[in-house]
Length: 321
Ligand SMILES: [Zn+2]
Image (cartoon, rainbow, N blue to C red; front, side, top):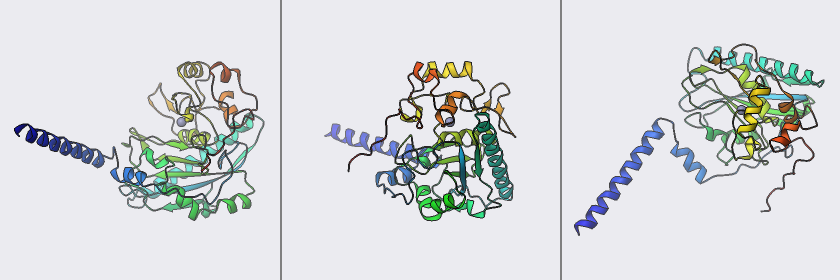
């Protein structure tokens, strides 16, 4: 009898400890029980707009509409501090510098790219979005149905009309989060190579990360992701990584140390590149964003997945329901 009582008490203590740990993690923003619950009961928002398996950002050349979304979080809003308007102006400058740099880089490959980003000239490219969660966390980019940003775009951005009006080839969605420099979640992008049914190609820009302010260099890097560029500094088993592994990473560091997909941070000075974008688009990145057709030999040497623009890449076949 004593033994049973001991077991019951131990189990109760373990449950209590687990609940306490979850509570601490939740209050520190490490996990969100709300997010986990909404994922468990996910609703898949149907797309109101679909451009095909390469998503809304196909090749980097041509005209691209950039829709800016200033997304509130329950704990960090865009209009609750005196400095917020200055920060929004900063986002404008960074986006301008990032897109100008992209235009110049594309010209190096004898192609042209134009970005319609100017929300002062076209106010319909500026949106303020109600809170989509408590914190800026990676779950925001997951296409698991609770993605309220996707639903926001469905209902509030007339993507087809914007493409037609500007006679554009691509449309991307740039989301900004007013988090402080202490935020531990980096900028990121959600491209359709990660999930071919994810059509809205969106980048996630926190105002700060790891003690530093966001830069135009980081924004240009994230924009390249949605056109199909891999990171050259990290690998993994997920399709997101294109089969990039340590050997390929070393090769890129040695041969293309200034490629913007190799680094966005000035390692020598141990700080970000503030001001103008710092970096270049090497032929490896150029192939993945559709600026050159032929795959560089390193793609085969390192057994990488082919570019989403390569006609030899296996096509996506949706699951039969
Ligand atoms: Zn990246």
